[in-house]
Structures are given as C-alpha cells and as structure tokens.
Length: 599
Image 1 (cartoon, rainbow, N blue to C red):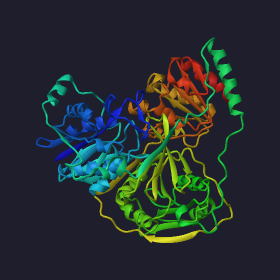
Image 2: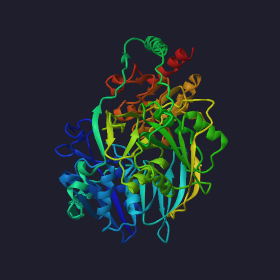
Image 3: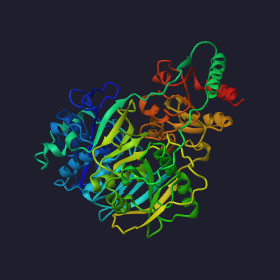
Image 4: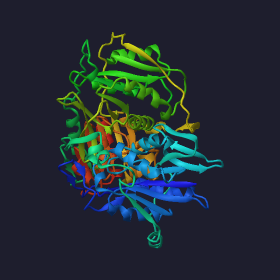
C-alpha cells in the first residue's frame, strides 16, 4: 500500500505579513510551520502502515517548506515530494487541488491522508476538491482508521451530531480530526534520520502546467479587499478590589449593555416579479438524509437582504413534505429544483451530478450557497472541482458589487481579517456559516414557487455507511439556539470541573461551549467547539471562562450581543476582546455573577 500524506506550511499568525498588491499572505521571507492538523495525519500514516508499505509526504509550497517536509517525514514516512514554483503564489483552493492531483497521479497512492483544516485559511475544502479531481471517495474528520483485508478500511468520522462509521475501499481520501492521535513532535534522532531520506522537488513544468493555469492568473477566486471585522466592544475590565465588588460592578455593566436596543438585520425584500437569470442565487437546502434542512432558511433570507437583482432559488433532494413546501414559499424561494429517485442517506459524491447538472443549465446565475457542515463542505468542494468553479469557504457576510456579482466575506489569517472574495466566473460557490444569519418569513400567506423536478441519478461510490451515533449530552444544552452561552477554556483546571460549571450556570439556562484546546484534550465532544474551526454563535450573552481569547476562537462569537471574560491573568488577549472582563478565579467569580444576572 502507498500512503500519501498532504501537508501544508503555515505562517506564524501573530507575525504574518500580507502582500498589499494581492491581499495574499507572504509565505516567503517569513518563518513557516507545519500545519498542526496535517501533523496529525503524518503521525497516522505509519500507524496504518504494514511492512513493505510506502509512505510519502506531499507538500505544495516555497522551497523554505523543505524543513517542514522533513519534520513530517520524521514522524514515520519514507520520502518526500515538494511542489515548488514562484508561479504557484496566490493559488486558490481549486488550483491547489489541481496541482496536488497532478503531483499525486504518478505516485498512485492507495490512501491520501490530510488534516481536516489548516490554521491560516481553515476552509477544509482542498481534500474534497482533490478527491473529485482524482475520482475518489472520501471520509472527513476521521477519529479512527482500521485497516481490513482486501483494501477495505473501517473509518469512524465526526459529524455535527456525533459520528458515522464507514466501510471505505481504496484508493480513497481521508481527512483526520483532532481525536485520532495525540499530537507529538519528532525526536532529534528521528529528525536526523529524516535528513537522509529523499525529497523530490518538482515545478509546474514537471507537472505539465503553465503559469496561466496556476497562481493568481489561474485562480477563479480573488481577494478583492481585506478589512478588520472586530466589533465595537466596551472593553471594561474589573480587576481591583474584593471579588464581590468586581462581580457587582461587572453585573451592573452587563445589565446596562443588554438593555441597549438590539440591532436587528433588515427585513428581506420581495423578489422582483420578473427576476433575471443573472441575479439567481441557488441555496442547497438538504442534509445527508434528504428533505429540507431548516438551517438553510437563513441563507434564503440573506439573499433577499441583498439589493436587486439577487433572488433565491433552492436545490434539494429526497422527500419534500407539504410543511417544507410552505416554509420555502414563506421564506421567499422563487424557484425550487428538487431531486427525486430514492430516499435515505447519500454521500456527497452521489449528489454531485444533481447539483452540477442544475448549475450547467444556469451558467449566468450569480452564485450557489451551501451550509458549512461537514457533509455539505464536501459536496461544495466536489461540485467546485467538477465544474471548475471558484469556492469560498466559511462565508460570514454577503453583498453585491457594481457588476452584479456576489462579494463573499470570510474570516482569514486566523480570524484577524475578513477577506472580501469575488469570482471571475459565474456562478460563484460558497459554504456559509449559518450562525450570523437570521431566517425571516417574507410572507406568511405565500404558497407558490416555481417547481422544477429533477432526477437523482445513481452514482457508484466506494463508501458505505454501516453505523452512526449521537454525542449530545442534554446537560450541555444547545449552544446554537441558547440566549446565554458559557464557553470553557483550559484555564478551568481540568475536565473534573465541568460538572461544577454546569451546575453553576443552570439558573441562567445557559448552554456550554468550548475552545479548540479543550476539545483537542477530549474534555468535551467536538460538537461544542467554537471558533475558526468550530461553530459561529450569536447569543445575547457569551461568557468565556478560562479562555485565553486568541483570534481563532473569538472569530466564532463576533456576532454575540454582549461578551464577558473571566480569567486570572489580566494580560490575556481575552480582555482586549470582550465587553466586560473580570480578573480572578472563576470559582470565586462565576457563581456570584450568575446569581446577580439571573436575579
């Protein structure tokens, strides 16, 4: 078996520099690191391997990335392949996937491993685009991989609700999650041994590509501008005096902030009576089991908050009940493309012909939006690769430009900026973080939309789901709908303190959330993670307990109405991000604060 592990080099997000001409981060002349998510994949490869297997590290990056390739090889791989060319600078994910596919074909891997995310862009879409390019099935967010006989792998992958168990035939692509292996760095001896292993360096000419196909020139998506998206916060920190005084003063400030008029999104407008094809934005509105995913309704409303000529159409599959039809009509859907021909769970791979077939018939449409779930991210990535269309991931804002195209705002560079992305092509594809958007009924009496039935064709796949499980502890609440959310960080002291925190926050009816490090440490399920590689929330009140407050966490709660931080260290970045900060031990602060607020 040949196992290829994709690794990416990322800059230090605290000291990154941006090229003002291209709005892209500079990867040359800055210190680069091995993406920690890919490092886990590099650790998994030798665990999967058997005697006689070949394990290769594959990287696209500058020549300076050689040290990171060596680091990944030192985790147990035999050789390295570095694709490096100045012409590749500025490549978007579609071009990156195309280049990696060209590099991998001569390798002929049985398994392609990759991290689920990267710390710089966090789109998680390159593996799906690569899988479609190579014609392979895939699993996202693997927490375990068991190798069976006959080229069969049993893989447990994470979902938004828990996990799915699959049987997957090679060749295939697998992205790994944080739970699959404990992170460790190679020893000095392993690093020295890796220096004697071969690293092949190839350029775009070696891959049969020309400069016009790669880099900025070949990328359909362009970062038009970068903007700081930090919300206005009061930044009042209570750090002096007895704990009771700090809590009393902080609670008074929180009540005052919550009493301010709530900023509400504008009401959606009615679509034009004769909408043009150029203003159509398609919203994919189904989940893996088919039917209407209610979480897609905010995307329909958001399209109708855009000015003319934009209007929403809907794409889905499976059963469409009368109640679902009513929801779509009331939300303002103008046209509904619905695939029939089978009920039950489907892989994203099986839905690609349905979606791409509709898009081919709508070549002048403005865009197509997909919810940012694990399943729909893969579908969007595959459609992007199949159609050769640009894909923008994790979008948190929509607007239009003077030419009638979509402008997609996404967190970038660790969440410190919002990148405004446009596409040279139509339609522009995007995965959307639903948290910032609000569903609205346009017309409670609406009952009609143009219905366009489409046939759901059969697609051969190497993937079969053989089991699933939920990981929702009712004690944690539902952080996506709760008005009050309490997030825990490593500063709470350990997982044994969580029951105490849950009991303390119960009078507020608060839901529990967590930082990535807490999830990585296995204290709570991945479904509770908030931030750049987690969920985006917009509660009335967000209380961060023992959280350091780095940008990659805070990007997930920028839309929270009032934010509060509790930490013993007054120098933590948390206090420069929240509305109200309280310095002190959470065990002394949280209970009295909850009492003051619940009263």
